[in-house]
Length: 277
Ligand SMILES: Nc1nc2c(ncn2[C@@H]2O[C@H](COP(=O)(O)OP(=O)(O)OP(=O)(O)O)[C@@H](O)[C@H]2O)c(=O)[nH]1
Ligand SMILES: [Mg+2]
Image (cartoon, rainbow, N blue to C red; front, side):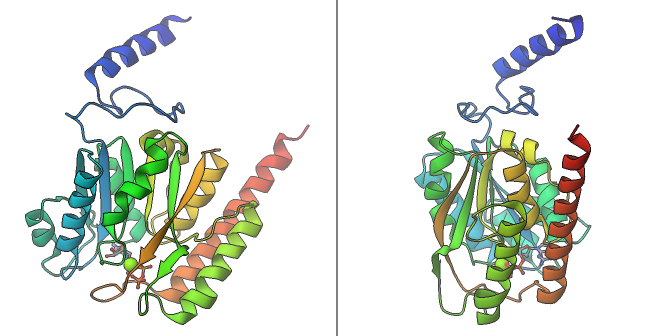
């Protein structure tokens, strides 16, 4: 053992005793079934991106807190305010969320700063628009807590899409076509590549190390989870009609997904060619 690695492992041991997963120096190594941190640090961080969702954000925060309590887990709800022009930040804070501000617009940018602020051992994603039911948190976290998966996708297509929750163009064309393209390009079998409800361990997140600032973060996470050889699971969820105005720009966002997928697949192929003798 070199002097440097000895120092690093001693520091890791000291930090592990201190109890916080990030200070414990667990990343970037992969430890799929570590025990949850002691209660002083939240077991779960529910992160919600929020762009002017004043009609729903407080209820989402309450449902997430109730969901954590039902699972018997300590937790925090991190709402990332992405430049709301309404009362969302105040309502989120009043409902018990920790509000973080991210001035750079974009679904991905909002998530990246929410994850950077989050302290939990498990990280959960979900919109602040009322379309995902945070009462389903205990089921979503099940495969992580049992140690059978590192990354769980809440699948709307394997579950239920309630009337009015998704326009038929997205349900029959947009989502299935983009999901199929992703599966074909990367040899995967996901049923809902753009679901906004997911959960993973902190170590899994550090292995995926996502970077995309827009909606294409959703595709990036699926592909990066597979590329990082994470154990993936899908749990059926119910998709509800959202409150307030959609922030989705269907064509522009679909274009960003396609560009990301083609770029990533090209890069993977190029690396593979170069690594061949
Ligand atoms: N699209 C988008 N959403 C953002 C942004 N910043 C934060 N968000 C939040 O990210 C979540 C996802 O956006 P939505 O408009 O719900 O997009 P979607 O779920 O694909 O579309 P809907 O089915 O219409 O809800 C919401 O909670 C938004 O408030 C942003 O710059 N763009
Ligand atoms: Mg939504």
